[in-house]
Image (cartoon, rainbow, N blue to C red; front, side, top):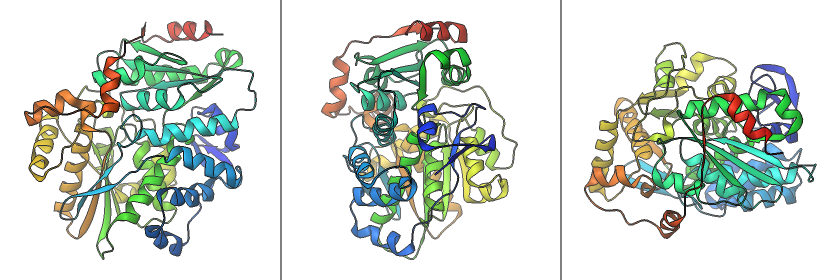
Length: 432
C-alpha cells in the first residue's frame, strides 16, 4: 500500500516512511492510496467477534500488503488490551466508553498502536528515534505511557503552560526515563506549530531521526477506526439509522470514524461537536474554513483553533465539500452549556467528563432535529481526569480510580520553553 500527501497526490511513499516521517515534506498528511471495503457479511458477523478479532480483520485489510499476519496479530493484541464498552444512558442514546486503557483516555488506542508499529518499522536500531508530540491534554499522557521505556525511542512532549488539567499534566511530566516534557509559554496551536516546523527543517532532519505521534501520523490516526466497528457491532439489532457524535479538537477521531464508514460500516451520520473553538462547525454550516486563535475552555483537549486533520476530512471526500457537509453536521457549546450537560445526565446515573458532555449535547441536538436515529456519543476520557470541573458541576467529590490517583504522587519535571522556533531548534540540536 502506498500513502500520498494531502498536498500532492503524486508524492507517494510506503508504510515505513509514512509512519517514521509522520508528516510529508510538503507539510501534507499521509493518506492511504485506496480504502479497502469489507464484505457486508463480515460486518454482520462482527457482533459474534471479539474486539481483537474485529481488529485483526480491519487492520488486516489495511496493512496486509506490508505486515505479516503474525505482525498484525501482535500489533492488535498490544493495542486492544482493554475493553471499550457501550453503555445505554437513555433510550436510543449510548456512550462509547473509551477510557478503560492505561491513561483512561481514547488516545490509548492510537498511542499503543503507534509505539508498537514504529518499533516494528524502524530499520536503523543504532539511531535514536525522537518522537515529537504537541498536546492539549490526553495525547501527551497516552503517548508518554505508550512509549515509556521503549528502547531506542525518546519522546518530547510540548504542552501549553497552565492550559492542561493538573491530572493530565501529572500523567506525562512525572515519568522521567525516555520522556521529556517542554512547558511552552503559549497555547496548543503554538506547540503544534513548533512540531511541524521541526519536521520541515532540513538541518534538523539531517541530524536527527524525528517523527510524530500526534494524530497527523497515520499510525495514531488509523487504529481509532477500530472502536467504531466494535461499538456498532455491540448495538442492539434495530431498524433505526445510527449516528455517531464525536467531541472534536484536531478532528483525527472523527476522521477515523469516516474511514470506518468508507470501509463499509453503515454509519448514517456523524456529528462533530466542539467547544467555542468552532472553526469546523462554522465551516460545516457553510462558512469558509478559517483558522482562529484557540480559546481556553473547560474541555481543554478540544482547544484547537487550527485543526491539523481538516485536510484529511477533505481527502476522505476527495475534496467534495458538499458531501462532507452532508455527512458531518457541526455543533458547538459554551462552557456553561457543557456544565449543564454534565448536570443533565447525572440524574440518569451517569457521570460525563467535559468532552463527553459536548459530544452528548451534539448528539441530543442532532437527534431532536432528525428523529428516527439511535445515537452513540464518544466518552473520550474518565471524568476523574477533569476532576475540578466535574466536581464543581455536580457539587460532589469524585472517587479517582487507582490508576489515576497514583499519578498525583509523582513529581513534575519540565523544561520551560518559549514559543519561538529558534529556541526549540536549539534544544533539539543539543540532544545529539
